[in-house]
Each structure stands twice: as C-alpha cells, then as structure tokens.
Amino acid sequence: MMKLWQTLLLSLLGLSALSAQSDPYYTVQIGTFIDAKPSDFEGLRDIGFVHARELDGNLVEIYLG
Image (tube, rainbow, N blue to C red):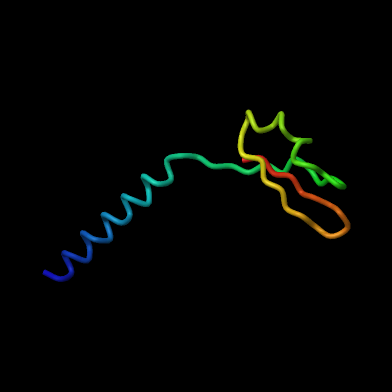
C-alpha cells in the first residue's frame, strides 16, 4: 500500500512540474557596454524585462528576457 502512495505522489509531482514548464522563458544577452545607464535601454522595455549585470571597469552586461 505504501508503494502505491509513493507512486501516486511522484506522479502528481511530475505532472505539476510538467505544467510549470508550459510557459517558455528566454534570456538574450544584448551586449556589454561601458557606463551604460537604464535610460539607454528604455526602448527595449516594450519587448521584455531588461536586466543589467555590472562587471569590472565600468562595464555592464545587458540582458533581455
């Protein structure tokens, strides 16, 4: 009986994991820029979420997702 419950629980968890993956997500690196400001990328906000990652030497990697 315990094995049946474990199988049922694993099946339900698997189904919930599959349904969570139905929405595709993506991230595209737009580029690496020197002294980039958020206002430089206002036009991209209509397309998706803009994310910046600061690097050394005033470099900023810009991603769109």
